[in-house]
Length: 406
Length: 233
Ligand SMILES: Nc1ncnc2c1ncn2[C@@H]1O[C@H](COP(=O)(O)OP(=O)(O)OP(=O)(O)O)[C@@H](O)[C@H]1O
Ligand SMILES: [Mg+2]
Image 1 (cartoon, rainbow over the protein chains, first blue to last red):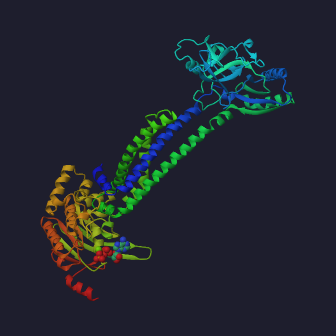
Image 2: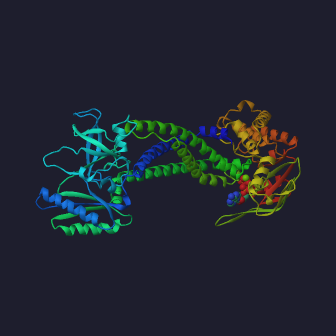
Image 3: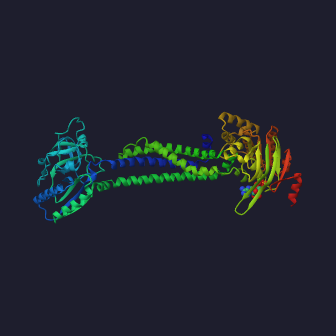
């Protein structure tokens, strides 16, 4: 390819080419880093909550008559018995929250008792009974589930924590980083001094906050709480959920006049809400990258068109001197190749630099190396495509121009 | 070597049809130096463009070296222009962004010569037109006469058998015009066929054969008479 004379001719008319090269560099920088952010967000959205999302729904019951502790216990037991008795219901539990709900309970856990322990680790807490594991589709990988007699009612005016707990594998690794063997039987401390004996480890169950870095850190404790606001999480046999949602809602509503059933929601709806920010971010960044790419493409078309007009005469002369039409097309393609190569080299350096800043500032994952060559190839192709139209027009300029205009 | 039979060229615009050439017939033999004169608008440039394959003809036949030109496609025509024909234009037509060396290099690159061969030819041609010292100059840094000599060097670099010149001295003063004509005569002496369009009779006289074009046709008789007639009309 005849890069030499093309390059030397470009040096005589630098301004336009410099601007386009910079535009390509900036577009590449933004493209690559936007992609890094999108990739991270997409990873978030793709994470598993641990739930059997397709077959799980939740609803809440709010009683509005005068609060009576003993009556609440009876009502909750009745509700759970009612729900669990519905054909098609696999299991159900009353809990304070569930994964993806974006609201819940968290506590600091530590391996030694005492306040202000420096090695304390935050964890989500779910209050459940022996049906918790099955309802939340949690797979036990070590130890055992709660037995019914480990499950106790919250004691009035006593905030002592239950003596047993089941934790996720991620939480176990975080609390006992050096433990090679089983953590079952170990004791951790909650609320500074309350000992909790770990009786089981589950593979995965997310905390209610998908944006939290500790989202995989979760502990289940065997306790029922007698608040007049109860959240029931219901897992059905496959395929029963949509039919059972209105049925169970009606069943509960009809069983007592003193309450409202609200927040009836599938886990898919909850998931959508939980990741609405991430999905929006991905859409916005996709749009921004596409817009920038189009603008850059148009810039290249514009510069090439301008150059074709400016060089109408010399293109005719070149044709007269023996250039074929493809040779004229190649000239403009080569020119674009040179501008792109410069822009993409600068863009590559800027991309890595910006990514390093972002990794530092927002603790983003470092860029996957292959994003850079992919972005380069993509922008190179955009450039060549953008220049193709003007180049073809150039190749159709008549060689007679050489004698006709002066 | 050049053989045109009843060549016509018609330009059509929305409103008018211009018959730039009408049944134009001409034969030029190898080694000839032909001058073409005629009033403005008579079809001289049109003839030259068709001879040089810069434009297609509307009717008639044109054979160059025994090949029927109308049967060639664009790529083949480009190749013939590149290898067999050298062009010299009134307005020099050097490429402003390229220096003298790169300008002469243009047709040689299209020819596909390697770097050594191109360099050898460029240096030889520049030597022939006496501008070796200006190799790295840009056209804007040269006088009109120098630019035209670079253009001639560019036309000669491919060692064409056929040189076409449209008013090569039109933008030059008498001295420079003379030196360009000397150069053309010398080139012709070394065997290259030349067709030169000019409106200056003194220059036309230096050709070995004169043809006079009027209304898109060759007309007979000594050019002086026709010029006198054109002037008095
Ligand atoms: N592209 C074109 N479209 C329409 N008409 C054209 C075109 N080119 C030339 N003509 C017409 O064809 C005729 C012959 O033009 P041509 O350029 O051959 O004349 P010429 O003899 O070279 O004149 P001059 O001495 O002024 O250069 C003129 O009437 C001109 O207006
Ligand atoms: Mg003319």
